[in-house]
Length: 183
Image 1 (cartoon, helix red, strand yellow):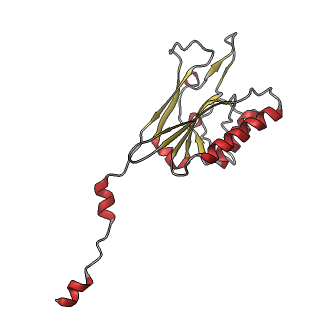
Image 2 (image 1 turned 120 degrees about the horizontal axis):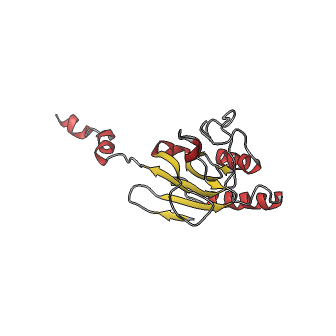
Image 3 (image 1 turned 135 degrees about the vertical axis):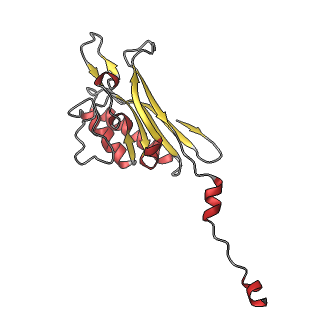
């Protein structure tokens, strides 16, 4: 967990590695309990980013999860880890960024099997729903040589802060009642 401080907005970044889909249920439960405890400790007003390898295939079927996923996932059905991630994001008001933006499938797969035949979207960038419009794009950079069977996931974030002039313009001056009475 990292917390980035600025004058106007603080950003809390949580990086996680979830157990594989074949792991014991108790191990997965422990992971999500720890992740929940971590999120509960984050300041409420921070921009929250959750990044990592969740080993989670998230379905492109949005029914019941419209607030959490978009219809642009690589997968037509979710695995157990995918369901757990969607539930966690719904509870913590997060949006799964890789399912929102339309790209060719080649730019969605984040992991390739050692034999090269299977490609899955299991690494995700999640952002707090309040700042969803700040996330401009999420895609995979296949050309990056990072020495892994995972591809680099790139998220483009643009935070628009309200200018001080606009904030001051909204403030209403309270009339000086004493001066009105003297007049």
